[in-house]
Image 1 (cartoon, rainbow, N blue to C red):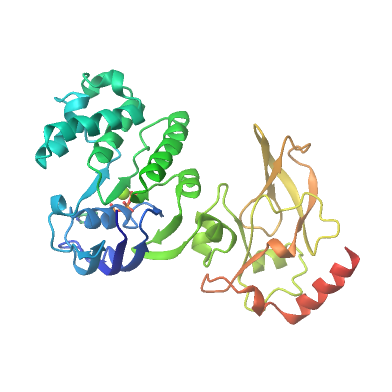
Image 2 (cartoon, rainbow, N blue to C red; image 1 turned 60 degrees about the horizontal axis):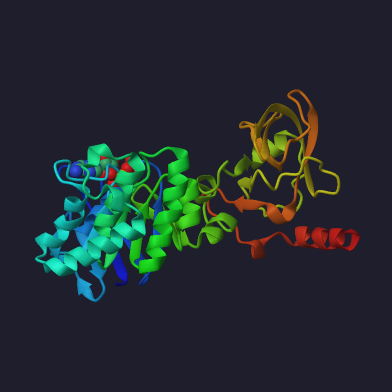
Length: 366
Ligand SMILES: Nc1ncnc2c1ncn2[C@@H]1O[C@H](COP(=O)(O)OP(=O)(O)OP(=O)(O)O)[C@@H](O)[C@H]1O
Ligand SMILES: [Mg+2]
């Protein structure tokens, strides 16, 4: 088990016009689960493959434990990678697949048997040990792929969208399963995903990437509550944060008194928008466009003259709202995220003194 440290890591693919990674600094502590998220093409797989040794390093450093591994072959790095398509050997049985990496490393027979038995038990794949992969379901194949990583007892696990081929129910199960195994073995891990829920629930450390750079690193709740850029604000959370340009707010008649002067975009999460603006500091007149009842909650899409994008309001249970209904929604001050013209978060302490004063007067009334 080991800490992974990445310093000023750069990648330029041969013949490419621009860098794919522009200098990544990241450290993942011993036993920690780091989750990488970001749009397609932002460099997540490239970063993972460089750590695994499947791609060369253009510049910068990768350390696993106390070793600089830049020049080491994948086999010398003592890392196990779990891929989206499982990459199982189709002509070998499940047992053969589990043993393969150990045999390659000339692990003694008794040790191989002990490790395979243990992994098969933990993963509940004992009944399939003598089957070939094509005779398994997607979830079972995924567990074999996980087993192949576990038996090697590597320094680190790397996962590249391991669950993206599975249906929603199985994804949910495997998400919990992988996290449980990762905790049990306390193996340092990096997990790449597109899935919001996986990112939020599995990460000790969540890393948001954008166009070859890291936008923000922190605990999932840090990033959710204090996104440091518009990009992170829009990326973390499903449905995403409502992002309202101040011109739109002005055009829809909102009173902007007290917003920090440099505010260019105001963000508010769907669950923080109030269906009734009574007593709220900022209010907007809107009309219900669509109502989606999603089982335990309702997503209400709202439009208004002056708003360039619809607003989404999220309420527990079934909201008694119908398309066409007028509403006056409230934007509570304490839940607003303000961003400047560069898309960067404006810190709370730089809030306009006029607003603080207004807030304290409101507080006296609450
Ligand atoms: N072997 C390669 N040669 C040249 N360019 C490459 C190579 N592999 C990836 N790229 C480019 O590098 C960029 C990052 O690719 P990468 O696969 O790391 O993205 P990603 O974040 O994993 O995306 P996705 O979410 O779609 O899997 C892309 O623009 C891609 O086209
Ligand atoms: Mg990828």
